[in-house]
Length: 244
Image 1 (spheres, rainbow, N blue to C red):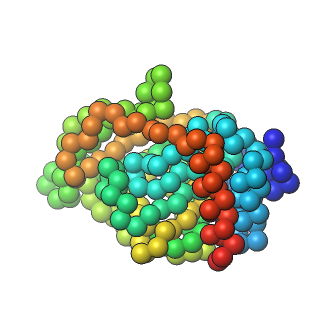
Image 2: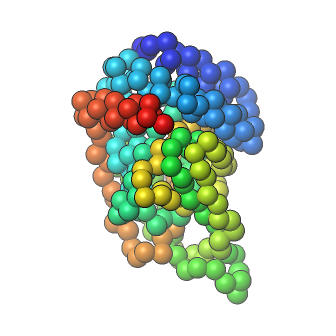
């Protein structure tokens, strides 16, 4: 099932995340784990292990694809319902269908910036229309029953207030509870690489998506990578990391 680096990563993930933790504790533990696994003396070897075909390339390729938010999503370790470790490769000016979307997640998450820089905005829903904010269309996003496609169900109009703006350079990390509304994007002229950890056995059935860019289609297809393309993307990423 894996080489030495993969087995070590699985042990670290299980030891840190598989206990009975509150969401706050889970987010803090996840941040600690991605920081450890994302270190320059550890992540390149893990990616090289995976690029050699160790682990579960067939299963991980099926859950790897170009995300609607504009990054390449490469699943590294599938921990079932407890955790999923991924590499995200963000491309500047990707022009993705959902790149302006503000959204939350099904469970607590943490991310470590390996290369480049990520910008992020945090938002909250304005309850009273008199409090200003930005007008947005609201959707409930879920997965289709018989496929992995995204399904977007209109959920009315909303207003959002910007609460925080931040930049995360290489070597920094963050963690977010599941309901936190945010938008992130590549903040440099070169690609940005992040190590992303999704956690939690008790995941929400849907996420909330807000857009100011006009109506979204009712469904967006996920196009999984072929195993050859998945291993090729990992090999490219390993070379990129070794050059840091």
